[in-house]
Image 1 (tube, rainbow, N blue to C red):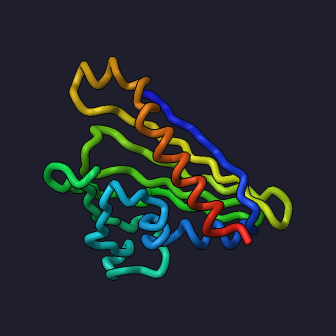
Image 2: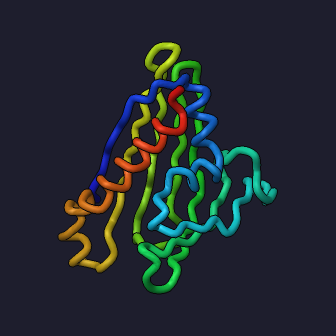
Length: 161
């Protein structure tokens, strides 16, 4: 399967960057307006609605309507792993329902001194369309690069002092 990776250095402490990314509010803040994202529901691993943090076993049900065209597309993500260390942290979400046959997004955060953090995104994916999507898979970066460039720019804008 194709893999997309991108990283950015943020002039903000690891704890601040990690805390921002650990909630559904962070997801909303990092999604471009043209995606028309709506978080329909988030629940913790025990079913608790709107948990303060998205931990392993948490589920986020959202919908998107890119460019406001066509029907809303449902996207159900589950946090399948989450780790925190003194010098870094990570979480991984897997799309359980949505537009891609396969989607696994690993978010890694690494301290770069006391006042900076490296954010690394790694997405393993399969495009829709069966064999045609498989052949076109390596071209997925055409759509992902602008999306992640926006996310990283927005992270810096919101978290850098």
